[in-house]
Length: 87
Image (cartoon, rainbow, N blue to C red; front, side):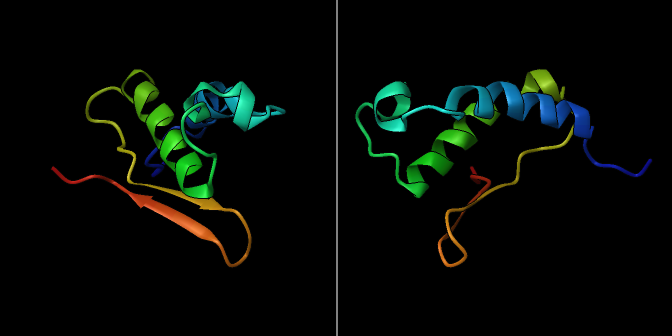
């Protein structure tokens, strides 16, 4: 098909790892990742990346796609991009 990623698998990963943990939650009090850090756009993007990477290998085995960037748009003028960490 020419697709780099199985969209259904990506949707499932996002639903389980991100939406399930954030949707209708008070990030300040109901999400453990923000018990010691404010849920700023930058910190939310970092947490999204961490959660996706935690499940990435299970969703996309070796040789599959890699998570290259997270882009979070808080407003039209406030956009956060986290690129892949190079080692």
